[in-house]
Image (cartoon, rainbow, N blue to C red; front, side, top):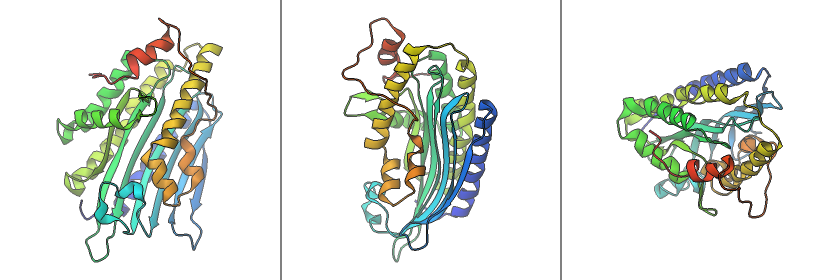
Length: 305
């Protein structure tokens, strides 16, 4: 942990959000709603943000990308479980978080988040740490998509040490895991949290590399799969698998818990929810089908590179 200038990080994050939303609008042909918000005076949590969301598009059924920068009087429990010495410290947190739910079941769902948290312990030195990553959740799996996504993640992290991709890939597999179902959420990617070990400049540079790597990692897959024909069977399986996404985000995701525990803006925190999802009792795909292959070949821990 180290001293930092949050303003520098905030400027980068706002620019990143603008680039990503612009790319989504260009690919979809639609226009995202831009909802600027401010916490009301007198609330415990203060700050502002910009939620951008495209719904009902030709390509994306729901694509949300939010920026927030907030300050609070006390770090919530989800942020201090690994650093109890900061319990009760005031904090500032900022980040960009996105989840895209495509309309076509052959285009994978994707998540990306990059963030910084700074704590101000009484009588101590301000400290900060970074977190983030990206992960891919296909409904129908393709080897070349998985390899491309992981290769782009690896290349983004390569300047910061050969250990970063394998370490953060494992971390991602372990984090995006539905413990109550003993099931991976998707094919993974990279994930890191509570990170400051490179010093401020290089840790922030690594954060930028991950953020800047998102569009090259995801958009070529979108273009490759967006026109794949599909029918009612594929749509039904897509909605069923989206139910797993909802379960993870509400039950296990630390970011969702942090936002709700700290008094964040609920509409923005829950932009990751799909517009439609479904559940079925003990649904098991038929053997030797593409649906069965998702379970046997893709949502398992694999070395993709």
